[in-house]
Length: 168
Image 1 (spheres, rainbow, N blue to C red):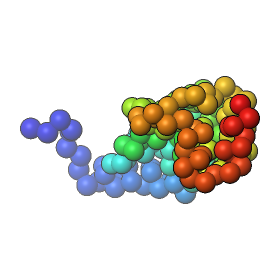
Image 2 (cartoon, rainbow, N blue to C red):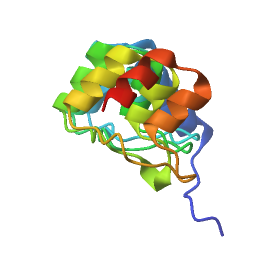
Image 3 (cartoon, rainbow, N blue to C red):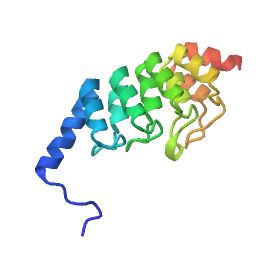
């Protein structure tokens, strides 16, 4: 017998509509559903939460609504990415601020993956890197292969973030 409960087609279709609301930034509709009892930490088959979908797609109001209804900013997807790591990769500073203001761990890296600072360093996102350092990101943290943010910036040819991290 499977560990997961059986969900009928209607329930699965409803869940997919909820993920679409988050992905498309339909903040008012999403808020109504959350008010009616939709779990704020609902996740899809890839482990992406409503917050991950809203934030990664740049929908500030939808992300705010999920957070206000108890969405966990540390809930990682199946690729071990938190919403903060995802928005750093996308380069969305306003979303970074929102997530940090709701308790996202600036050094969060589930299962030994890459920290948000490592993503900023790798993709030469200097504004993200500066903000994360200001918020207390640890430049000496290592991933599962022992690489720091500086190592990753060097390996990716990210000259701006490399120079900043070399300054200390």
